[in-house]
Length: 218
Ligand code: SF4
Image (tube, rainbow, N blue to C red; front, side, top):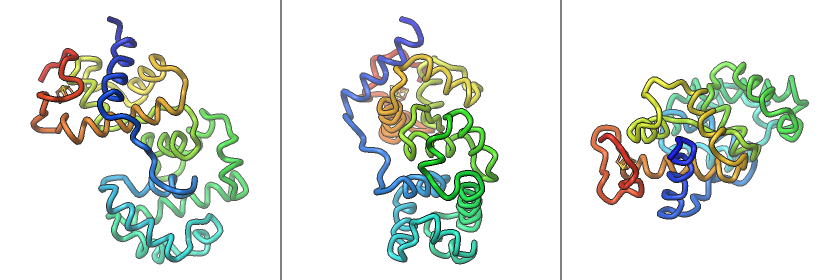
């Protein structure tokens, strides 16, 4: 079986066991984007609290976020941890939208996907995983998101060496799968699910894992 065939097989096995994951939780594109920034180094529960705070104050809008100071924003998103840094990242993103896309997310997502990715990566504090989450979950555009769970599962299954770069791993998925944002969306969410339930950092629980029968090294 080729690597591409195994990548597809792993998707089928995960989907068969877990079904659709319903990612990304949220009501609007801006909410998805804020979630993508806030979720760095924290649990989703803490992100939800921060987003609910912004919602309660009716602040999920580019115009309203523009008017807040970084300190005011930091207090509202306190629950998400690293709140000063995250407030700065959100303010940087808002400035980026204003300067490049006339405050319009629609304009931003009309941009060519590769140009948009490069532009997002130029925002201070936005790395590849966050940029790709913004594009995939916020814009529903076909770009694959890589995270620590992806590395862990694929390396334990001998599909990539552990030191594979983010971009190399992303290429592997994008060359192997149909160019469909829905599949990219589900696959990333399913890898997170199996990573949390079975493929744990220190002691993987292979017994009963949906990927138990696929060759692995632990
Ligand atoms: S827990 Fe075991 S079988 Fe499951 S993904 Fe991790 S290494 Fe593979």
